[in-house]
Each structure stands twice: as structure tokens, then as C-alpha cells.
Amino acid sequence: MKVLLDTNVVLDILLNREPFVDDAAMIVSKIERGELTGFLCATTITTIHYLATKSIGSQKAEKHIQTLLALFEIAPVNRIVLENALKGKWKDYEDSVLQESAVHSGVEYIITRDVSGFKNSKLPVYSPDEFLTILETITH
Image (cartoon, rainbow, N blue to C red; front, side, top):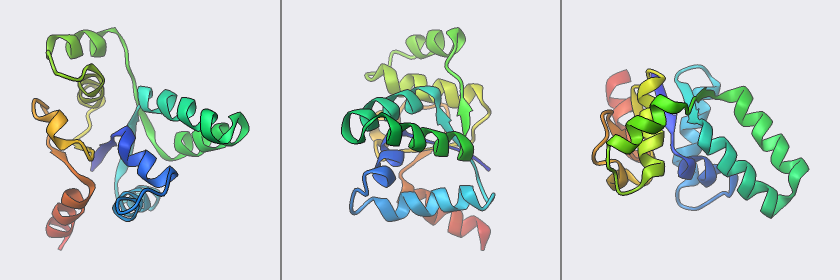
């Protein structure tokens, strides 16, 4: 099962944001164990690098990026993704780019804490806790 994690879910783990970190970490654990194939949008990597460099310095930021690149597949952002995202006329272009990148990469689900921002998504979109509940239902 291919899932794309929104930037906010990754930041929940990296910043240990309560009460969200546990659900996000559980999903990433499933990716680490090979139970799910995890994707990140290319823009998520650049955003996290930027934020991490500002808060913890470039060397630690680089280590976080290396870890993410080892664990996740990267959903590319190219001309087609950007053009399709524009055509979608979403309120938030960044969310539209993420969704189009996921579609382009064959992802099945988007996991975000901003579900309402993805109401026009072509893919099913769930919060981390909703996704874990659904996963529990279909695996038992």
C-alpha cells in the first residue's frame, strides 16, 4: 500500500509535537517494517531542510534529510505536476502540488493533518489517526 505523508505529519515526528507524534510515528514504523511504502513529495524534503537548518543547524538538518531519503520514496515535482496543480484551482497551491505529485507517483492515500485542505483531492485523504483506524480494519 502506497501512502504519501504531508509535511505536517513528518514535522510532527521531527518536532515531537503532542498529541500528534504517536500516530505519525506509528505510520512511519509501518513504513520502516515494509508494511507500507512511504512517499514524500519533493517539496516536503526542501521545506523540512529549510526549517531544520534554521532551528538545528545545517549538519543536523542534513542528517534528518538523509534519514528521510533512505526511508521514503520521493514523489517528483515536474512540469506536468505543477501545471495540473494549477488547473486544480485549489485554495492552497502547495497542497495541490502535493496531491498531483502523489497521483503522478501512483500513491493510493494521502495522510495529512489538514484533511480539509485536500477536499478536491483525486485520492483518498486521511488524518493519521483515521488512517490507522482504517488500516486496523482492513488488516484484521
